[in-house]
Image 1: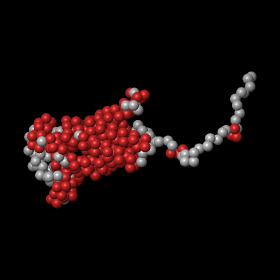
Image 2: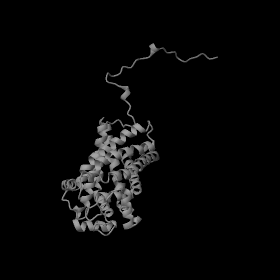
Image 3: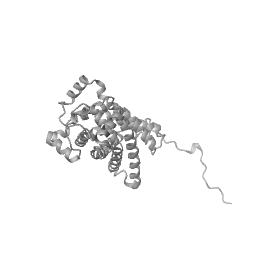
Length: 322
């Protein structure tokens, strides 16, 4: 029988490796759920991403708004090309950017709230599982409820300025007149509809984005870090297009509520979603509920790609700085 040749060690034989006085092992590992960032860094990343996204795609948003408000406004054509020609003919190229100031004032703070709430909720609800799609969807719903409270007033101002022959000279003129003539409730006339629309939109968007990102990384894990920007942009575009297509009818309702009484658009007594839908169907048929779906998808696909790639890039910058 062979003798046991394994060495015998005692605690006294172990060499103690001294640690630096400022070394803290409990914070040395970055959690995949928090990305190692602080709350304010998520807010800054989200704010930058939101402003770049909406500013870059604003002309497409103007075309979508005019198409969706077309039921009783002067523009008679509902095609993308004809609507674009009408805008250029009546207002020139600058007409595509009417209301962009309101978008800038609303998009930054709203997206700061949007992404920071999402990241906090994702960390809380995921239970340490980065592939928890349900947690991503629920976190997105919480994020949109909070951000819509910030964004809805400026979104209403933006859409009224985007209409043909708008009676308002600018952002502050619109704010002042709406406040004096219709009261503060007018700024939140579409809030309920916006939340009801954006809750499923965001749930589909975030769940689809996280799932698409995971699939793209698994396709080529070796080059995932080198192609990180492409992965975020592709996953964001797919998620944005899918979510936009699903929620177009509620977006039409939101536009009708925000533009009511302006440029000849209908005014709704109750402001309920059901009444608006019935009015649209009675006047334009069920096709009226999907009006503007093409520019809406053309907006959200590249907008989501821009937004997610910008957001993840700013996060990466903060991670390197930290």
